[in-house]
Image (cartoon, rainbow, N blue to C red; front, side):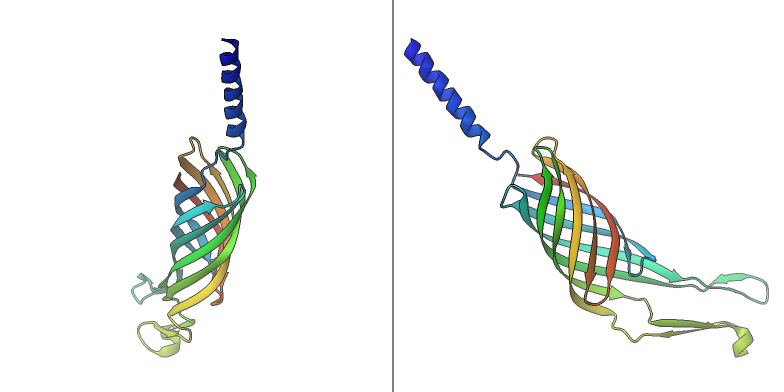
Length: 209
């Protein structure tokens, strides 16, 4: 009886010791992201969205791949008052939209069973289409002798571009039950076409497994 009890206690102790050496953190996750960002010099507002797959190959180090898009819109405000004192909005409106894929390496500065905080950095490749003109000038009737304004638009840059670049982000996520995760990130990205998305603020939800 005593021998059987001793064996059972030793066996239980061994299980506890081994269990403490097992990483209880999920090693893979998929996430969906939605947020806001400014484009260019910071005067074009828009939204960003994307999907990410992440895998930890060390307790604090991970790699991830993602695909995402962005859409921004702006305008050159302009109004015109005709002979009947009616105001017309003749603003030029434009859109900048892009799709990109990226690969990053992440490092957790702090990692617990339910909370992660860290930094990611990596490379991206971006396709972008823009209807923003290179230059724009409006000539009013007083200078043209016409009864309506004339807008002159010049384009010297390509509408569609393909550019490599880089990205860096800070992230924070909460995993309440080792299955679902919620989080926030902020970051900066730039590419060889001179396009910058900064600042970025986004929220994400995902599934760990």
